[in-house]
Structure formats: structure tokens, C-alpha cells
Image (cartoon, rainbow, N blue to C red):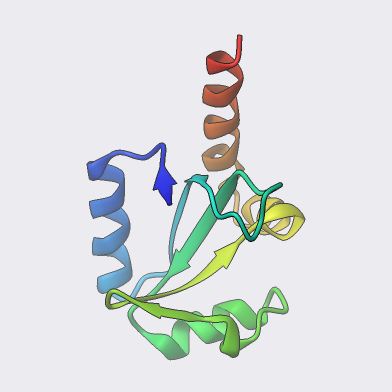
Length: 106
């Protein structure tokens, strides 16, 4: 279950991914299979070859690509999520969510 993002953010991600760009979107997430994971970053691209090549740079296997809703993507969680977002200079996506959660918990 995803939450913590706007319709506009989701539409921008979908547009970039549909246009063949490697697109990133980070949001809060809950899945009982991963009780300690609170956020996920979806890295999507409609060009499967481009997405798989991008993933190779980070040791991601093409078998890990999710083929859902017309938007092939990798799900990044935990330390790998943080490492990749830092490398891609997109760590602000994760930090923004964590600040929201911190404010809510006060």
C-alpha cells in the first residue's frame, strides 16, 4: 500500500517512465512481509533494456523488475535504496518523507 505522494508526483513519474526515461519516485509503503520497511523507491522505465542496464550499475538483477500496470520498475528498500538515491543525487526524495514522518510523530 502506497501513500505520501501527490497525484501530480505520480503523474510526473508515469510520464517520465513512459517517455523512456529512468524515473524515480519515493513514497511511504506498508507491506506485512517487510514490517521494518517504511518507504520504497520505484525506479521505472518503459524501455526494459534501458531499465535493466541502469540496474546492472547497482547490482540489480533483471529478474527483480516488476512488470505491473504498464510501468516496469525496480523496488528499492532499506540500505540499497539510500545508497542508490545518494548516488543518483536524489536522496532528497527520501529525506522529505522522513521529515514528514518525524513532524507527524511529534
